Length: 91
Image (tube, rainbow, N blue to C red):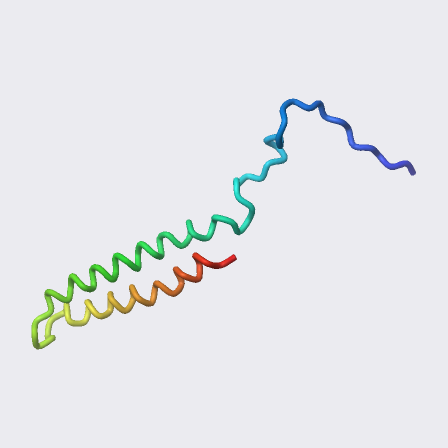
């Protein structure tokens, strides 16, 4: 059997055609991770700032709800930084 030769397409313009171009401008894995990590960074910063803001409402005896909520927000914010770093620098 004879091999089929590919049909030649007329050259319209220099550069890749829209059909041959990938959907995203960057190669897979390039530039996508920081966009996925941005909400994690934002949430971590918001939790840390709100945790410190809640600390101002804690009574000296530590017997109100703010005494439990403020450290929980701070801890969650600081722990959320770890996955944000991983998603930012993953290749």
